[in-house]
Length: 169
Ligand SMILES: [Zn+2]
Image 1 (cartoon, rainbow, N blue to C red):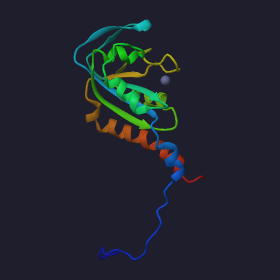
Image 2 (image 1 turned 120 degrees about the horizontal axis):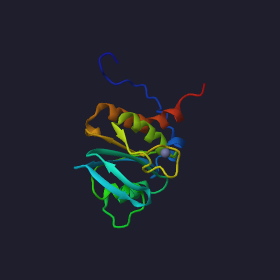
Image 3 (image 1 turned 45 degrees about the vertical axis):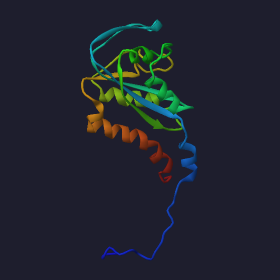
Image 4 (image 1 turned 90 degrees about the horizontal axis):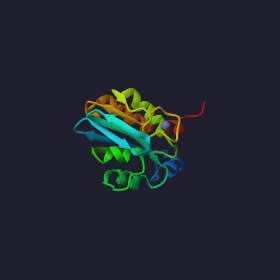
């Protein structure tokens, strides 16, 4: 109403329940953000020795079940190392873990997007099971303080929804 009073007309909101039931589960991908205080060389299991400049590191991973537990596993310090990122985690601080819930495995799409947003990458890191050049990217600045990175995160979280609910042409 022009005078800001409430209208008597009530409309039903169209809620896409099948989409919500499919997507609102504890699975999907995540971006782990680590902060490395000093330059480090590290032996990373059988992958060999890697050099890491000090700065912020963004790692793309996924867990198609128990996503919350996987993210918690990265936050906790472990004695048993399994993934490449476990070695870097052992000498770096967890800055953030950002879930991107989805029924699709998006970690390679996320890695590609992170590559475009980062200053450098660590070739051959975290990508033994896929065709990517890397799943780990570095930046001298805190990505959480970057408007560009926040827009990227939002688009990664919303793209699936927009695809699933777009009217079919
Ligand atoms: Zn990949």
